[in-house]
Length: 124
Image (cartoon, rainbow, N blue to C red):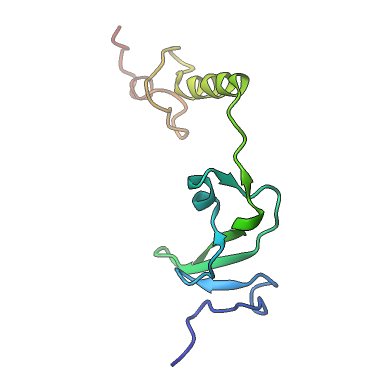
């Protein structure tokens, strides 16, 4: 029986980072997203390992893994942080051409709302 393609638990082939195939990481190692789902964050710790898989677009993709026992709780949202986040999201929805809130995040490649990009009049 041959080893899976990305099996490198000592990190000799991947720059010193232990590497495992998809769904074969040891217990106690989690991605940022998995930590966040548990109300945790990496908390400044270094990457403990990585999971690699073949991308459907060619090449390989990594997901970095962190130790659960070193993770820290997520910092609570402060009122100032919530206000700044709301202001930033409003700016992403506001069209610079017509000044209206589009109700969606403006496409970066257009830089304006869809009616302004199409040259259509804005319905009030």
